[in-house]
Image (cartoon, rainbow, N blue to C red; front, side, top):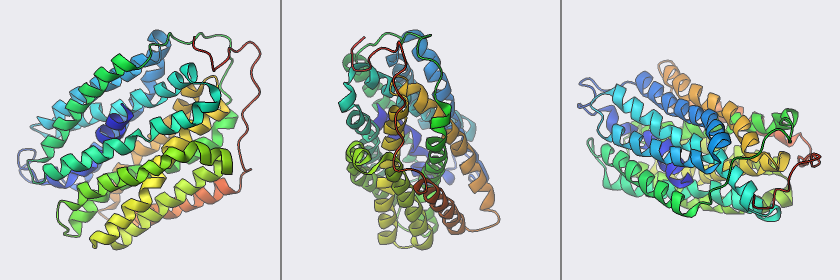
Length: 384
């Protein structure tokens, strides 16, 4: 589910952007950067909406229910985008498909807290988050098969089909856990979530910017259309290194691992912005980007579970929502800035901000200790 929702639904717009930009079936005059930036922002607005609504549904029907809604949104969104006769319908489909990621991510943290023993939880969360890698590989393969102006619709067809298949498997294989009992665990330790939230903002801005404009950067450099899907697939393959994020956090400290992922993201933006006219350089940017996105996503899940082991889903939602707001704003701002400065300048400028955020994290203590268990809280390693 995470592979389809994140690796396909959330990031497909950037992959298809170069082709749909000039598709006459959408607009006779083509879509300009401002419109494309707004649609990309709409996709991340859908992601934010899913994040906000998932806890509401989970508290009523259990944590598996939001994952089912996410699969449905991916299906409907993919179908609408694939059949879109106008930019407006494309935007609606993109928003729905983008919302799937928000519906599923935090819900799986709650599911892990309910059915996975505490010592194994960091690895489980890292594996779940790294599922995005598989989705990116599939997106790259489909993108290669769909090269050409009308072919971008095939990518969205694949998203709809994959969402339906993943949703069905999710219903068959994911345990149905009853809603968590409320009223005994107190409030979230919001003060302890400040630093992860700062990281989340930098992480989301970096990831959003790279995936929204990487393929278009290659088009601007007049590289062959097939390089963009290859770039996506390469990110997915190399991103599998993030399967070890849980162990790295235990060995080096979660804060240090988080800072390292921001350094990877910053370096990828610099490389892409400075030399995307070369296919080799563009692929190098993807190779550096992969540990940043996959490791960063896993760090968010592991970090929030360390701070709030009994309410990891709520903690992850609180942190990611702030980052998602930044993700909504970033593509629109970049689209507007492109009328004034070059895309390379924007990418390098954002990289400087990520470096500053990483430096701030490294000035913090080595790790963030989990708070002591609350009196009366149930054991997190027992199946309810």
